[in-house]
Length: 475
Image (cartoon, rainbow, N blue to C red):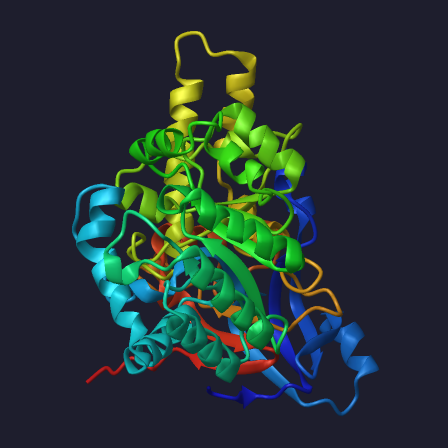
């Protein structure tokens, strides 16, 4: 880990973060955000102790060592709500739709993670890629091998990163070498929880991969783990693909729908996240909302595998809002960059918006949902920061620059990326950089729609610089 910077210091620069959900401020979304053109972030032992305009904050901290990050927009570190650690090497592998793709590419690759050396090498590459994309926290799947979970947490510990993960439970419809019995899953999960949960910045998720791949016995063991370890998270998939939804009904015939499977087994509730949720009904969305459960929206993966278009506007229904994060879903998602994921999320929202708003006789509720589908820069970067933290019940710890929170952040170069990026961005802002919150938001939108990981100049973990973009050789 590159430890340029220090855990007891201050960072000066242009800061942009969120204090509220922009969807609650229709027409006035900037009221949910905060832009400090010349700010100072004071950090002690990896925790933010003070933040605000430089002229004010600096007078309270005379003599503090200051690192000045110039000509960059500094945002809270990005939070990836749904990613697969053991799919680094098969990122973007060509295949058919979800279930065939799993059999052809994913399970054969994940079996390799029972080898400790292989898993350790992959872990280094995985976290390198996260940091290069500005991601400082992730909720990740490992495999059904305890070795993969151990190596994931060990590498995260070395880098002092806030992560959520757990051993994957799957006991049917996968290769024999990939399956784990319900009893072995329970026993190994208990051991891993004891070893890693709450140790340093590691958090543990009870992880039934997806209900179709789990017998009733496996789901019962997950319930037992949640009852015995109630402060653990639960991480799974739901309603990603129509075939998967049909199979869930076939294999759990006593359940009325896919969500009922998790309700029946005592899993749906706070700290529960299900990836995708594309084909959830309106009633299921309401039950997610009432339970305090979350969905991770994975547009890059959903489009790559042809799974469908997530109803973002429905999930943000003000009467029944669902906690929501965004996920890269590597390797179904073919990039680690959450900037790329936001670009695809914007397109999904626009497509859904057109289908609702462009109907012959749109209903009033359709028009309202269509408006909520529109992913402004405020809404987008909220999902990647404070919104993601809120979905994971970590918004008391992460997500903005409030004192008391962990000092994870990313410095974005708004002029990097495509060859004409700087010229494009100059439409919104001159050479001096953004002067107002709206100008800053326009630059962020330009990064979202025309940029990628090349816009990530630095990534900081707990007040220490963990990544710096390499200088480009002109030779």
